[in-house]
Image 1 (cartoon, rainbow, N blue to C red):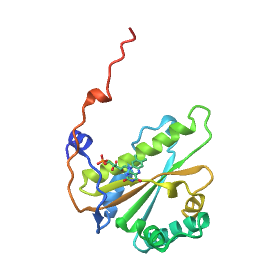
Image 2: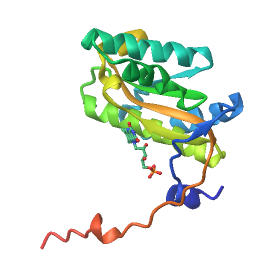
Image 3: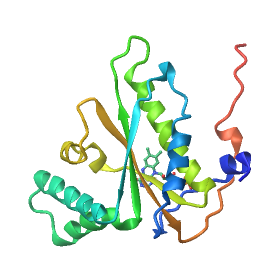
Image 4: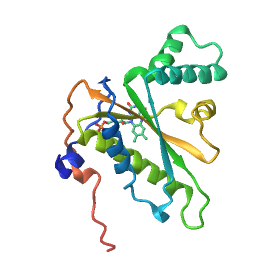
Length: 186
Ligand SMILES: Cc1cc2nc3c(=O)[nH]c(=O)nc-3n(C[C@H](O)[C@H](O)[C@H](O)COP(=O)(O)O)c2cc1C
């Protein structure tokens, strides 16, 4: 795929079915992640891949964590939590790994991790793999973070759902004058 076409036409896809990306496709996605701009070359990110029965266990982790906060969750909401990770055959959890650094503050490291996550999304699209970056309250839940094995210096920047796209979407046109302006200093 032409690079400019990828950069200007990429769309997310929330409706994803099996198969999950192949090992080769994933390798290219993580190679793309490693080219995220990175002040100090700290590589302040890591990824977890989750598929198969581990997606069910992630749903259980969501439910358990939510029950800690509210033991009275209704059955319909319990089922929604259990099924949440089953919206794709694979989820990649993008994690920022924050180091103390004299020149690179935390926010820059999180931005690098987010750029790495976007590179995964773009490399998925370039290979015909559907992707959807999702977040939500559970991303910030201490029990979810613990269950996924995060350390104290780590935070989740996104859950990237991956699979075969079930439909095509056109990238919307956007009027650049709404978000681009020239500053002349006059
Ligand atoms: C940090 C971050 C978190 C996001 N979380 C969600 C989410 O939880 N649910 C959702 O529907 N879209 C979420 N999105 C937006 C989608 O990934 C996607 O960009 C949006 O649906 C627009 O589609 P497009 O990428 O094709 O323009 C998130 C995006 C970012 C960058």
